[in-house]
Length: 633
Image 1: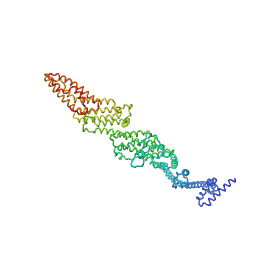
Image 2: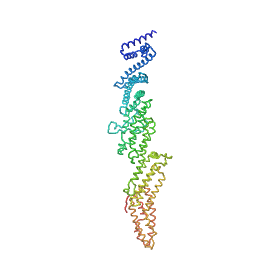
Image 3: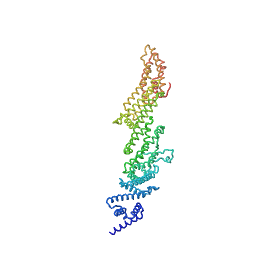
Image 4: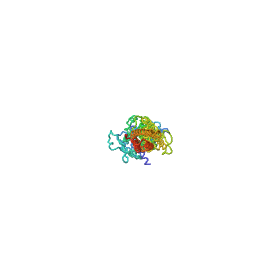
């Protein structure tokens, strides 16, 4: 009992001191607040209870008690806000970073938590609470602005303005070669090649990530989650964009890309192919992980921050490829466009989980659209190849009926293209909407149809070009050379799988037909001269007729030898086959003619004089045809 009386006396003395020294109610409340910090017996609750028991705040009635409770609550809240204002103001007005001292950081966060609790108690506002709530909101706004500054400073201090300062183990995949890392603006830094994309870049230290998470948590609770995500994106975007720049990628408009000479654009595409894998498989997934850690449990702000920080760099890479896709479709661009298509296509399994949220799913859509644009570009390039073949003019004849440059170009082009046969089939099937063939090793696909069509266009062009030769037999040699070359290139590549054996057999039959046409055009008149069934009449008349025929043969054979040794059959097997065929046609007729001629009655000693070539000579000279030497008799 004595103890209770002593405590009552102490509380009464404190109230008296506060009342005496406090010229206003606010000053008295401040004095009571100070006393409450020194002794647990002088808590604000006990002082308030005594005030109520003493009736100093009441009016003696039931309604007066309720009004007294309201005034007491308002007074307590007022005192709490003044205390928090005092605590918080010394932080928000400081020129020194709060997070430069961990104790200050903890104290500031504790004050913010208390302020948030107070606002929660005031909301929804009771009658008379609105001024207090407005004061609390103003104070909260100051806290949020300072937390934004601290949040930004933590990020900027940690990544230091260089994407290579991230504390990842080992060298960063975005390190440049030493010669280009000295800050020389005249050179584009080139990143080291990376083959293993199963890497994570820790752009911020774990301690910083923890501090950022604590700040983010308060800002989200205070209703400033979107602002926090935006601050993160603005502060960290430079790191992402500089990382992309160190891969040799710079922002280009579509007009700039399409106006770049192909040799330079080819180099840029080579850098792009490396960059898109590193950005979408290392850099952006690392950003996804970092955002998820900083905004852990604070959905959807992790997604919002991730989309904001990665959007610009992702769009930059995709836009470059789109500018290439809608640009010039010259055939030589096919191989780079195929590389770009494959790079984007192969990313899809990684993009699905990466861009699955509402804020970044559009990037996945953009990538899918780009894939379709690149596929359309590939199909367009094949159409341009057809047009190029059709437009190739029949100007000068190839000397000796040799291989035409358009044949070599088209066949080597298609052979190289079919190294990516699976991809090209995928692209062509996408256009028709048909399913892939069940047997991928023996396809009858849209690509096969496309290639066969190009072959028909090429063959038609070659037949037009063959007509510029004045000699029909040389036209046949020209078609045989080019036809045989086409067959060889088809057999030695994936083209054989696409076109099939039946196509090859038909092409071989055409070559044989041209060979037969050559023999008729060149040797039919020779064989006609060597016929002996028309030599009738007396022996002397017959001998004279045969002698004249022999002279005509010599003339024909000399002319054929003189011209056709300068003709060309590039394929050795084809050359040997045609020589054998000619020998089998000419030699028996010549042998029979010589035998009849030597047995003629009056040929006698003049037989050998007119028979300039022996059978062996004719065979030897046939064996020298198509060498491209232009021998003369």
